[in-house]
Length: 285
Image (cartoon, rainbow, N blue to C red):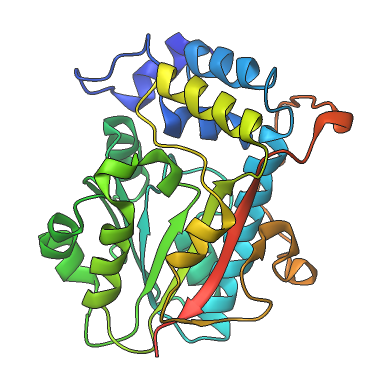
């Protein structure tokens, strides 16, 4: 799809600068989506010079979303979800997975990208159990007090709180730890935190990706497994615990993972493994 073809169906808000990459659109391209611009595709390919496995990592995260949300809806009995940094609707969306298990599943998508808001509202206009709101995930009070959130989410019942490959977009000064803690304080016992986060023990690779993304768009940093583990303090981890997400119940991958990727971005296997997604699911006792 050309950039010109993309603009019309999206009815892009005037504040969208299509000359600057967007994290949401970069991720959309990485997982095989079509709602991105040349600047996003160029940025994605440029990342491969320093982190050649980043595309496989993004696609592994999308698969983790499917396995994790299916677990929450089927085994944990979660019927309502708040998905932070949801990105553009693409393959294996939260509401599709959740509602396949329970047609009454309700989902609030949260993103600060106006393209996500415009596109999501158009796609979800006829689904009264799902909505998308434009908000900063570092400011959970706005999400909690939103009329759209209050319409769909009953905070007397357990909630699935999702941060999938998004908290590395927040710099330390935005205090992502406090944002997550505030959300967990707002939901009752039996709620679950599902999270994945880019991590690395290779300082050069982490510095490259952090610098590259910071130069391209608003971003935070690659963190360590220990830093991500701290988000789960006080929660009861679901087996197999906090791991490289490719090892989180891989045998439970849904058979229908959406439409196939319509483009292939090669990686160089001999350089892979420097950065990965780390996380899991845990229950609030």
